[in-house]
Length: 328
View 1 (tube, rainbow, N blue to C red):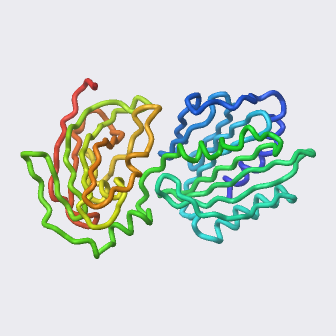
View 2: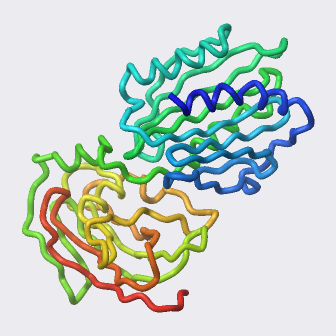
View 3: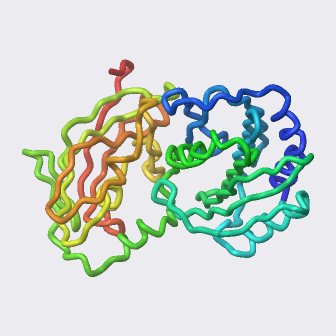
């Protein structure tokens, strides 16, 4: 696969660069930069002092970061292959072992990255007498898959927590194949209620949640793209503990009037945005105030905030937000 060839052809050169004067300071998380990977709506943070080499083609993007004693590479390709397929996963590992014959890649763990399943391996290899340790992280996206490879001189203990910090910062679009959302969508045991929207309180009652819209604000996202901020109060009205994102996205979707079949992607508004509130699990009858933001395709076509009783139900109510030429 072409992506793998890019990865391994550049690995030796990148490691040579690592030991030729790159930054060695481990930065506080407040000094990390937010990065959006080309070709895909995935965001993550890396230390601002790391040197970046990036390459992008029609169907793949590779970001390579180097620092004193280590490297970090993020690679994405558009493909129908899924890294959750054990055969595809093994093929990727075999290619890595071909390029680094003395490498050890083992200890597979299934981890969760921004509510999505991911696969993490331990990585060890020796190059020019230097022992490197690190991890390889893989996860599927709707239009391909992404790999993240982190390797550092085993003597460089300062970086022991950096990869965990990067992992915690990763933001992935909600996947149509997301197993958590699928479970919610297919859960027929949750008690169904008659869905309705109360216009006097701007509150929608669906099968699992009550969603009160507290305000809609036109704004811009972190990259100055037009965005809409939806402030809400959500209550888990089911008898099962569920995360905010499960409750919210099984009953609410956002589109623009000119493309009603295209769901808008979740947006990061500020450098301090995180998914803590959206990931939070609400117990039955527990409520939470928060906001959900989406990146808009343009500044002109009205935004439709649509409600439905559950993920498989038809649209039950729509709030229309007319955009203006100015934002707050």
